[in-house]
Length: 209
Image 1 (cartoon, rainbow, N blue to C red):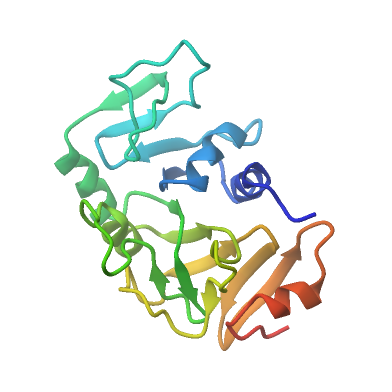
Image 2: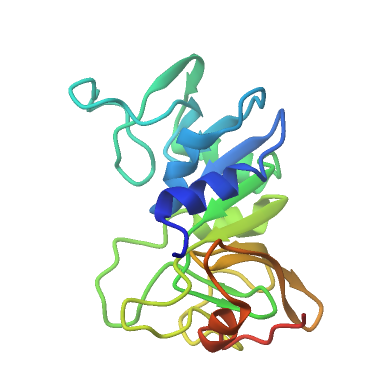
């Protein structure tokens, strides 16, 4: 009865505001591009050098030269601009991007984020996550509430290498929506069919309401 991946992406899209420049992380966040509310004009930015991404292409209409930072095929729009990655990171580091919607392995109750590596597992690199959480104005995490093994992802302190300290403002999971506030996490919204008791049971972070 909890939210699906598409439900989470659709809920995250409700946080978008007209005129925003937004970066979408790998995984569930990429689905947000398909749910931008009608009447809201948002420009999607990718750290591999693209400004103005469209939704995912229909099967058979993929262009292998058009990919996002997660190497997924995407579409372009009439106003799309292309440039090198150094320009893209200059936008991010210069505070030009209003919001980043990212995935996570762990989020601490104070907003610390770990989402770029698991020790002992092969990673190609840290990507743009550290730059994003340091440079954008607002960071929203969209992730499953627990890991595949059932362990809580919302915890007191991150155990994995940090991407950023105190950077997350909102968390959207399959169980609900949470604001990072002083002292812990505040339940903003509960997914249909989910109880607060289930949230308490599956959350290791302190919930303040």
